[in-house]
Image (cartoon, rainbow, N blue to C red; front, side, top):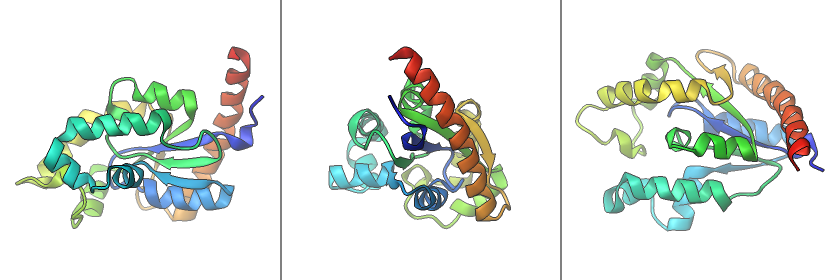
Length: 185
């Protein structure tokens, strides 16, 4: 029988919504480890995401994301900060929801544009017009994010407020997850 206090938390959302920052703070409060899917993929591949994109293309990277979800991280007591495109892939939201609680961090388009403006580590933005690319990706992905779990806005809110909201959502949803999991096992 699983304990609600051990259920993984998966933070999903668009780039620049705070998944890594919030994940680190929530993991510290819960006494969980933080695993960042992008960092784990880079470590395992021995290359940066930008190099994977350049050498093998985005489909190869998405395959590595699927492999990470299916077995590249602990099954309990872990906060996973998921790369922005991970949950958008067919079947991945269901896969995450079978493994733990999914919370979506969300920010307005202007906030995302401001937070990613100077980034040099986002291969999807290595294009002529990064702002247009962000607008297009945001529009394509928003519907999936909005049905990914509890939606928490990160625009202009103190970090402690966001962390508190994520913790409350995780506690509530972890109890539901355990009840559902116990019924099916």
